[in-house]
Image (tube, rainbow, N blue to C red; front, side, top):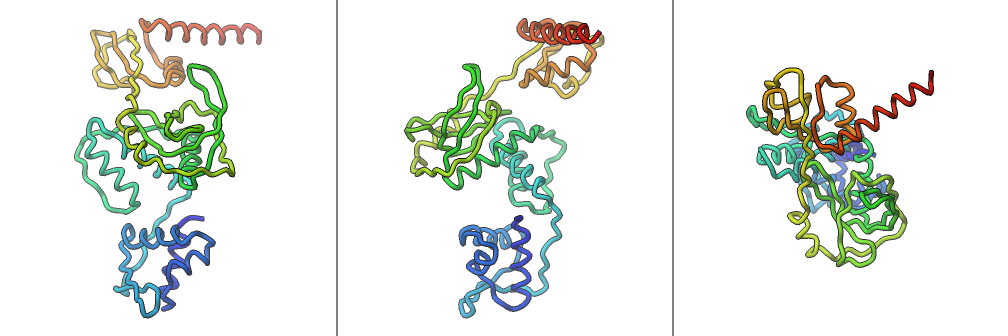
Length: 301
C-alpha cells in the first residue's frame, strides 16, 4: 500500500481532533513504528505539514488549521521509477553534477518545487523494467538484511550463488550491488546488468560492516564506452547520431560511443550508414546477425 494512503488517514485523524501518533499509524496499517515515524517525517519535511506534537494528548495536531495536503497523483510504478532515477542521479559525478544532484534531491522529496538548471542538458538514463525490478528487490533485501539467491552471467559464464546484499552504488551508466557470499570482509560488486534472476530468501544476516563499505564509492571503475567508426553518406552537423554521442568526426567518418552492444546493433539495422569500419569484433557480430537472418529467410522459402 502506498504511504499516501496512510498519510491521508493520518490527516483525517488530525482533522477529527483525535491526536494520532506513530503507534496508532503502525497498528492501523500493520507496519513497524519505524516506518510509521518515517511517514510522519515525510509529512513534516516533504509535504510541509505544520505538525505539532502535544505531550498532553500524546499525539499530533496541526499548528495551522488552514493547511491542506497537496494533491499528489502518482502510481506505484511511477514512484518506483522516480526512486530508481533519484538513485542514478544522486551518484552522478561528471558533467553538470551540481545540477544533476539538485534533480536527485527533488525526486527524493517528491515536492512540486521547481529547480532551475538553465539550458544545460542533463544526462538521460534508461530505466529498463527488468533492472527496475532487480533494484527494488535488492533494495528491499538490504533494508530487511535478507539473503538473496542470484542467477548471474558475465564474461566467465553463468553461475548461481547466495548473496548478502549491503549497498547499492552507481557509476556512469552502470549499477552495482555490494555484498558478500560467506565472509563479510570479502566484499565484491555485482553488476545489475549481469543479473538474470534474483529472489529473496527467508534467511537473514547480520550487517556490521559500515566501515568496509566506505571505500567502494570511489573504488569501482567507471565503465568506459565502446567506440565504433562509421562512415555516413553525409557529414553530421550535430554532436549526437540518433542519440549516440559522437566522440570525433572527420568528413563523413564518425567515432561513436556506445555501451550496450545489442542495442547498438539493433540501431545499425534501422539506421542509414555506408560502412562500419571498426571495431572488428562488432563487424563480426553484425555479420553473424545478418547471416542468421538470411538463413532464416532461406528456410522459410
